[in-house]
Length: 146
Image (cartoon, rainbow, N blue to C red; front, side):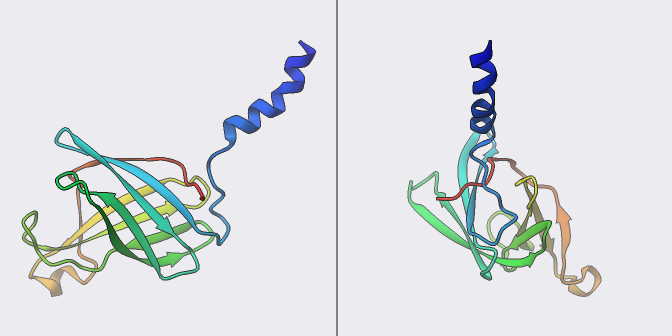
């Protein structure tokens, strides 16, 4: 019994290890698994709170190649980091302009994705666009560092 009590701090440390402390200004990464219509894949976000740019790396399910997508670090506070894309032109998936935004809670490490669309009625919607439901599920791991 005494040996188990002595090992308890090691077990607690091991069970809590793995998640990076992202309250500092050091770079980190978060990997999220998306699921849509029975398919899934991983997106890995590389974020440096001191830089204006973050990247998302993903493997295309059709050609198997790895691609990078650039995000802008739009807000860094002691409690959150916000990264978002530029407005993208309409494509085969939407008839409106669109952008993605991810809010990362610096204390928990949780990433919450948002998507916005902006139609032709720019003046009535404003440049923020309107929030739309995501057409995929997102499950993110805790932040890590290499």
